[in-house]
Length: 121
Image (cartoon, rainbow, N blue to C red; front, side):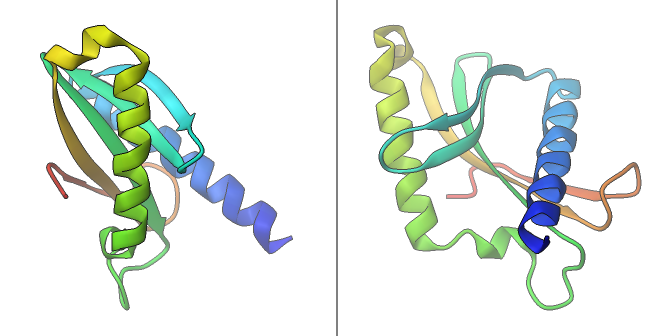
């Protein structure tokens, strides 16, 4: 039951993050891209930059801000997965890369606080 709730909460947060980034004039390239190393929640493009986005959400940031939960192991998995993605299409080689975190706090919905941390790692 708890796992099902967490999946739904995470999916809603990811949808909110995507809508937010689309409003910022980014283009969605891929969602939930998986490799043997891990998963990247959102892969976006803005001009000549490919942006790999990790989405993190919590009901409260009283103990830990959602972005702080992206530890070195997670960052390493995202970096390795991004390399798989970039090698998938040779045309991407001329693009810059960036790793962002979208941190959401609160209940999913219009009142949820969104922090977009560009070049988070």
